[in-house]
Image (cartoon, rainbow, N blue to C red; front, side, top):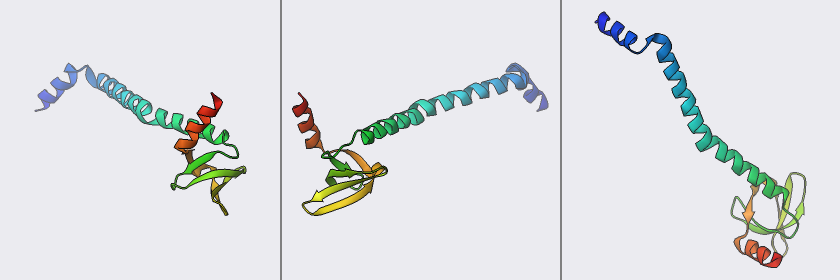
Length: 112
């Protein structure tokens, strides 16, 4: 039994070779995680930060809770939306997810 284990160990180049193979495998797994999970999330976060920086009064937006409104006031960390004629709600900037679909189309038509 000991002879078989010793034979397997020497056939693969010894303990140093096995360590190298495991190291390459772990580096490969990390690279896969980076390119499939971490990097796309960083890009999405950067796009969202740029979106929030470009918001201005009058933009029609949607919150993460699904509330549609028009930007009335922009603070350092908050945004106040008009959601009805006399209703204004204040949100954190991160709660704003995107422009309203129709508002985005109208904006692109006006700029052309």
